Image: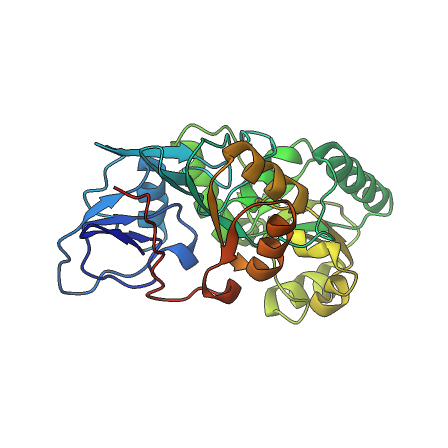
Length: 328
């Protein structure tokens, strides 16, 4: 929460609360909450895309406004509809943010603000991601090698955001199928104007007998552990190979922790260097870091001369109030 002169703004709250404004940055479930029976007297700020995607996921963002006097919603490049909140030129809250172009996703542009509240999910120096061209080259090479051996490949990423990018980036392979949960989100993206290759769901493909051993195919599925029943079935019945896409793949242990055949660093968040660039572009007087490596990233910023401190010790912290003296 930011609060000053009696005005309260909740930023991605995990539960409803009385305030003047509630801002919802995007439609990942850790940024949404189920509405309680009691109607809160608050103006909700969110993009149209966020409201529609949230509805498809079983959440309601009623009467959301994309603009309001003194507020500006800024594209953060994280997923479709993701926005940051700019209050005048005093405060900018990023929500989750990406500074790189990825298929149909454009990079975020940082506004100038006196106070910056920025995510720090990958706020440690070791988290630097390869370029998209390297990611696609490595992935296509693995798929090609598996196809030559008659081995199907499952591309795994978060159901909302990453899975749609994977569908777009590797839709040239044929046949390509999508997990039923991915198909639902792909459909919402298509309704919102994002062109994605039409693909049969895995349930339909199974019913038609199109999934078979020694017959190569591609499937886009949620990021799951190898012990997941779906993954076990795909590997046991069809000999499928798994590739996981996440920023955490930078760590050498991630592949073994998840039991995946391959992992490739690819994220819808900024890496460490991009986070630094984002702060430099904003050029604030004060920085608050939150989520992930908030404390470590704040110390990096302090060494660069920024007045910075973490909020909630890097963890989501319900009720955390940021004392923003510059907020009007």
